Image (cartoon, rainbow over all chains, first blue to last red):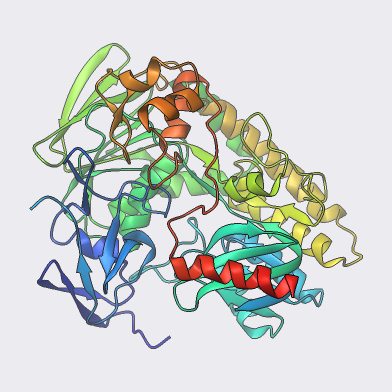
Amino acid sequence: MPERADALIRVTIDGHSVEVKAGTTVVAALAMPTVRATRTSVSGEPRAALCGMGICQECRVTIDGRAHALACQALCRDGQIIQTTGPR
Amino acid sequence: MNQHYDIVVAGAGPAGLDAAHAAARAGARVALLDDNPRVGGQVWRQGPGYAPQAPLRAVHAALQANPNVTLCSSARVIAPLAARALLLESAEHGGICVSYGQLILATGAHERLLPFAGWTLPGVTGAGGLQALIKGGMPVRGERVVIAGSGPLLLAALASARAAGAQVVAVVEQAPAVALARFAASLAATPAKLLQAVQLTRGFAGLRYWTDSVVRSARGAGRVEEVCIMRGNRAVTLACERIACGYGLVPNVTLARALGCEISASGAIVVDDAQRTSVEGVLAAGECTGIGGVELARVEGEIAGWVASGAMRNLGGLRAQRSHWQRFARRVASAFALREAACAIPPADTLLCRCEDVTIGDVSVHADWRDAKLHTRCGMGACQGRICGTAASAYFGWSAAQPRPPFHPARIGTLMAACEHDAARAG
């Protein structure tokens, strides 16, 4: 594995650059520095990760242009672009 | 892309890893699939600052060193195909068809997440869910967390949250104190579990561990700010940033059902004493065959691996271990059985289906799950009822229809791979 446990990488979340440890899941990066909505529900509510393990689909975001990716099952990569659909 | 293996193992948690290891040692060509980017499942989850635990390191190293084993991480099963094959969507390779001689299902379990008023607020997660998020690198230092629901998983979540610097305000357990006392006394039969309980709780020092208690509601503007807990008949409100609430585990049987495997009344895959399901060529091991913990999962996985590979081997010792951990599992199940307060139906305006935003009131007027789906769209969103179907089952006793293929949202290219597979077979 090329990743060192203490290496830091940068991802962009909704246009903001965020620094995370290598190996961080995308859903964890979304919670920095606080709980952030991953999507807007069909009735307009903000939602964030619920199950953390690929079941509930609440954490789906767009990662590097690919929509409906589960943030809890994706790892951050340096330069990755993450877009949420949470209420603005 | 089409690939063939003697044995395909679905799920790289403890059961799947040990199944693959046994099968590969017996000489079989094995593919080990998992939808997560890293092996280990939930109990052995790794992350930044969470190096693989010793047993995972050992089995993972053995698998990587074995040329018979192909590890397919970030690969989701989308559908079973005709004639012993599965359609996968791999993050790296796109759509893949894998065919197998024998299939071992080690698909694990998910949390039983029961709705309460405000449970859709950001900051509410499962108990195991919080643990998974923390291990994935989510910062919780200084946050006030309430851990709630039922079962030993609450203690594991407690230990993870504390280690990550969160302030655990309370652990809220629906089971009554007397059942837990009986269970604690029974831990003498499994000294390793007793030690684990003491380590996870630090002997309950300075901890509010409330039994006979359930979360009633979460409140906050746009995110969790406080939680209301019923301690028996008394309501208590605590300020917190997170609520991690899960009522035990439910076997993941989507693929098993789609393959036609018999499922028990309790929702687990039915297996015989050799871990064979009711479908020829399909075995199952671990939590998907009934909730029993990591030790039981590992021994079931090993048995399944040997049996699937056709290795002639005396399984007596493994079967004895399996019985030991099955007895432990029964004690856990009885101590933490869901009681009335946990299954009390929340107010009618509480959302049941989070994908389609359908309230409990709208669902409850229907006669069964199918009727409710047809009229309200509950269970018809992206999770295909995995979350709300489990809750509907706890509240109304409905047997919720299982997800149908494609089991997960899939790309068109993945579905096209299935067509190519069919064309190749026909040609």
